[in-house]
Image 1 (cartoon, rainbow, N blue to C red):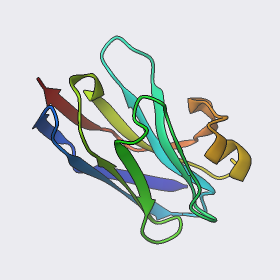
Image 2: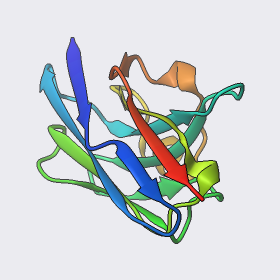
Image 3: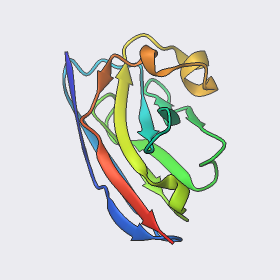
Image 4: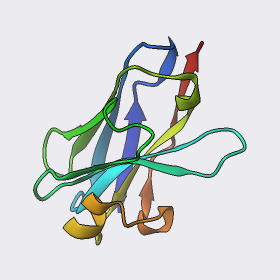
Length: 129
């Protein structure tokens, strides 16, 4: 069992930056960790993932070049640095973890939300124009 706790959400003006943190505890042998988000009235979207065994990353097209995912200690903590934020980035952001997604699927974006068994409680990010 893995517990994920997010922090770092908040409100910011367009063009600003935020950094989200996710601390993992418990059985932290996760092969793939990342972030999903859900905006009001929209489906959950995979934003960024990192393969914990080597650091290869994936980014959704909507955030590529603006967001950066990183890990501190393998399988323990990840971060999401969000720059040049836009109002359309407003959403609840969830930290997620999978213990079976391999390098190809994790870093290739070949996954859906059902592939991530472990979810944090979510943290709100609000970007005003």
